[in-house]
Length: 129
Image (cartoon, rainbow, N blue to C red; front, side, top):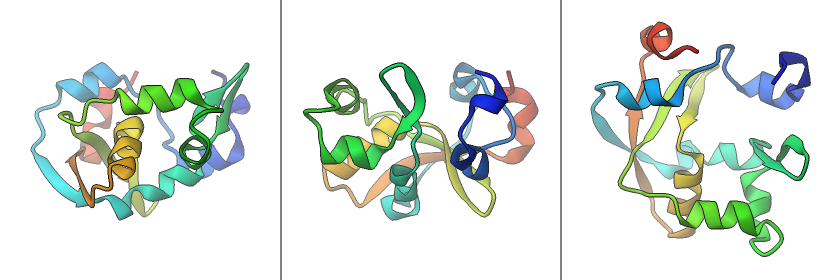
């Protein structure tokens, strides 16, 4: 996707680099617990795609109307919580590199904490596309 096609809200909260999820998964980083409340702000940002458009659907919309967004809701409920959520500090808060559907499922299940791996910013060169 071209950078100019990314909505401003994503540019405002997102990273200024692209990463390869497989490279993130391969990192040897310890798992720790984090309060889900520190990550729930993601639910208000349109990180999901619906129809022919991209970045036009928020997690909160999916959680609020599972029947309408069945594909994303099913993807959420099929997420495997045995894997931690990969996060990195960005612009003053924790931003998810991988695991938004797992976070959504944890919220649906009423979990207060989630397992995370905090990726240090020094690892950007190792995970960049």
